[in-house]
Image (tube, rainbow, N blue to C red; front, side, top):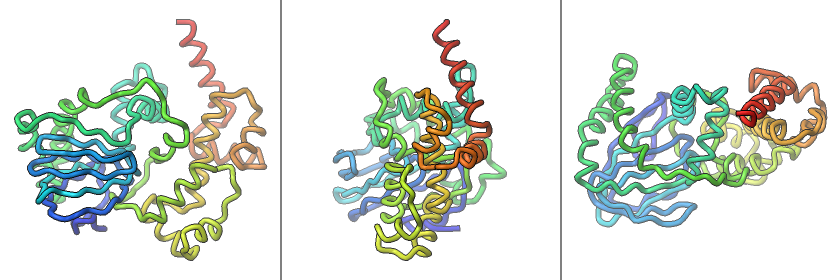
Length: 312
């Protein structure tokens, strides 16, 4: 059990809804989940790592995971926020497109490719957004009452009703973001994690690992970069990402290895060295543990799929 910046208690759930009225500046924080923010009344200026955006009643904000964002309300602003687990949404995309996607990893890549903007503001207008009010209020009530187990399908129905209206308005891109930027917003395999604001130290260390997974990072070295002890960093990082910095490093290396196996003809031993593992056997074990298949089988499957696509 934990609490968000507004003092609400959180436990792990794939969907959590919260309403709040804000009348003072909210400092930039990042969450390890996707957020849909519905502006019910008032206005504010969003301040994020991708610039400033003015939001008013009737707007919906889509915020990617691990994106720093704060707000400066004009007088007051009332919002309802849906905290959505990214792995949960990835599964929805996979089942929606299961006829053309091989696995949920590929669904995650598709999400990164077409939903490239870390922050989007959708201007629906107050009249159009008014239809969300009863759905959002019920989602908030179910989240507050801990009714998710007994009313699980009702919550899914409400969420899908919201997404059915919102998704067609989300901007998509045919241009992929740089690999480092994509990796900064992509958590790994599903895990029990809480919807918490990320400590800046954890966010900084995660970015260091994502930008250079091939580096031989140690816990002490990472801790020194954010002026924490190794034990403090381990605790802060685990609270933010659900795993230790070294386990997160393994996850980042596996993701980089998967990309190299797909895009290059280098040997598996060379690919392992490129992501920071000198021992190819150790790399293969880590890859299989994370992806479910050995590196050679993974490469064979993605190459076979590529050939099939070209022959169509």
